[in-house]
Length: 447
Image (tube, rainbow, N blue to C red; front, top):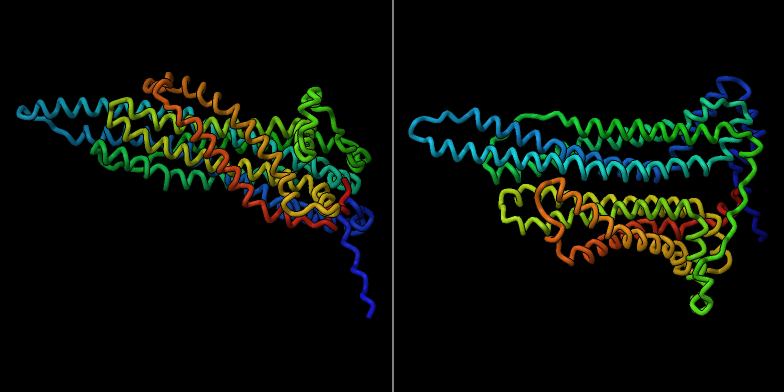
């Protein structure tokens, strides 16, 4: 029995403008078709949207949890002071209580300084990664933008296609971050301070820093999305519908050392050339890993240096904060690597499919893609370690306690190990997606 040939795949939006034009012959149909395109943007980029929400949630949760701690300590001290009515017989006790209260206010000042330093760095990493995600999303859909312009859609419609994507991701992430930071992170931190200093429970404190940070990230990312989409929307449809030529390969500086270059295997030569060919991806990936690694280093350094202060109250107050910072930095590092690797896989689906058609085994395909991410991660870690050391030196001076000399040597390898562990976790989550690349669908796409 002769098997019937498989039906041809459904052409993409950019590949059949005539058919879509028939569907948009009336304003109502045109509006319906546009809403379908917007919905497709959300469905087709669900992984990027989830990564954006996760990044924003982690950052705002830390900002909220640590930012509310200092005001709660001050309110608790004020409540304890108002509850004390000294008499002539307990003057010494009143004096000791006053000293304890003043010391807790000093601790609150240190916590407040931490809330201005570390959370803002987390917010900066989030803004950087979201910026990279949005700009690369708009660039990858240039053909679809050209098709929409050909069908008569205005720049306003094109902007409204991407701005809601960013707004939803940052708004949902900001809301979840405020909720997690206020209901989970801050109670854990305040409980450690309250139990150690025997302070009373206080009422709710408005997370001003969390609200401001969430609003700032939302506004900043919407502006970035608007700018990226506007630059693409003002191009002519003929330019947008014409595929960009593949980026040409260049020489690697190591090639000048002929004896060293000849000793490298082909797969390592290919990795080096791909890394240097996509310089924007190189800079963005290394920058993200640099800051994430520096955050891990700072959190560990802050925790390990507390033992040298000789102040149990300060140690018991700051150590939970440093633990939260380290955990948040590791999570942030994992999401950053996951997001970058996911974008890398999506943008190179055609290249990956070609390798599989040429007979590359699964292990070789995985190594081809993940080897580049590993190399970029190692570069980011190597640069991030001294950056974290320099940042911690400044932070200790700003906090007015601790010293960089108190940070043990073991913080360096421990930080590197945690960064590489984050890489391994992110790659493990994307392993099946990489091997599940559709060869037929990817090779029929228009680059």
